[in-house]
Amino acid sequence: MGSLWWFLCAIIALFCWSGSDLFSKIGCRDEDDKTSHLKMVVAVGVVMGLHAAYEIFIGGVDISFDVIIRYLPVSLLYISSMTIGYLGLRYIELSISSPICNSSGAMVAVLIFATKGIGEDCPPAALVAVALVSIGVISLGITEAREDEELRAARQSAANRKYAKSWIAIAIPVVYCLLDALGGYADSRVLETLDESSANVAYELTFLFTAAVCAVILLAKGARFTFRRELPKYAGAVCETVGQFFYIFAMADEEHVAFAAPIISSYCVLSVVWSRIFLKEKLSAKHYASIALVVAGIVILGVLDM
Image (cartoon, rainbow, N blue to C red; front, side):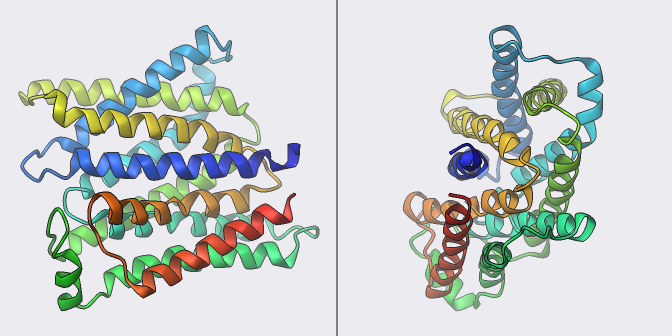
């Protein structure tokens, strides 16, 4: 059962981060609020700071300035990608941004295989599973990006909001994807020398500091905070923090890190489903075909390690 821990952590992170996607989208979709992405960073930083305090003072996690500095490159890559992702939620549908953003999991697996090679004990079925997850995630993004304008208009007819195609809207999640992939790869290497709990607390403290900087900027700009508008952001922040906790443990398993990354990145599949249910963003047959590929890959990876 111990060997399944990485898989369970990856699945929990998958569900939590899909919830974070949904709540973050609800909290950041107001185009009139030009600082919504910074407010989202503040919300995540506050929740992560509270969790870090719990881990340090109650959980007894060992943390030092040296650990924070050693993990800082990873933290900055993740925080930068997330901030850019929150910015993009104002301009593009969740069902488009999430798949594009989470193609990063495929890039992480490719980077790991390219630098470390494919282990002799790695079963061919596992490589097929990684390919299925990667292809499914990428094809989901391509399906959305190449959608015909008339079909797009029909799909958005019942949605809560209409969006126009623009190169900026597509570029933002692509930049997120690149930064997140670099962060995931760096994470897998740094966690070879750091305790995962200490690394997670270091990340949370860095996020708290970033949130404090953003809060100062918001106050200087005279930004207004209302409970109703901020509540979804904090719900997303809680999901993000819980997901990050389990993500760290999934990525800390050196033997399965190349499999954990694509599984976790496939949380965009659930994000697409949640966007259909709660945001009224419709799915097509191509969407469901992509989702089927991702689910098949996840099942194969889980069965192989039982």
